[in-house]
Length: 256
Image (tube, rainbow, N blue to C red; front, side):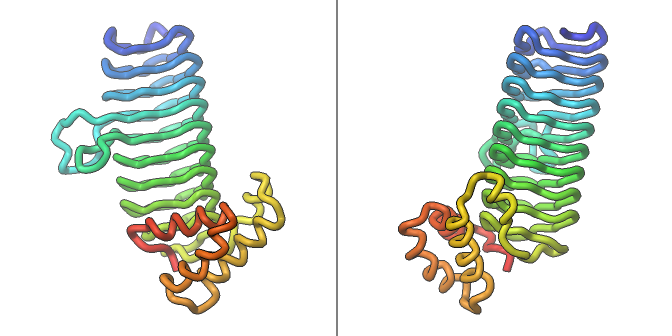
């Protein structure tokens, strides 16, 4: 299952049945679990662990040093979960000691061509990152997010669950759960209603989320006032509680 033209370190931990294509290079601290398929001309370096049943296409650079001038060779990691698809020419870097020391990618993500995931990012599950999406360092992307092609995300931003960005969107602040964003710089454009329907949200839940969006963006309330106004529905409805919890913990504030 390993092409004879691949270069695999004897110190790498590669499970039986892993496929590695020609001219790929696997470094000494790499761990790859069963069922993962790696195409040709892929380079995987550093302390990188890759779970089961992933597919990594040609010309990807996975687990190399972070693009951070402060990095001085410290021991940092990249952890990738299960069943992810990572398409051509993606770059995913290890963490830095200035943060968690680890870049994390969860399960069942669809990462399209030319995507860049910088150091210390935390990527959840069931996320789509379309072509040439670029995440700067320390970005957190929660579950079920869809990032349109050429989306750009500033350092330390958080992107809430079930949100959506249009093509060539640029985020310099946090994007709350459920919200659709577009533009450079990004502005809110409504609720990701279609995505919520696909994920099984009821009509009543979507209606409450729309009402919360109106409170947050169309009520002329200051942000702090809008958050306080949302606390009552959040006390009885989990979908609104998730939104309020996100707003309470936002460090860069949100797009407005």
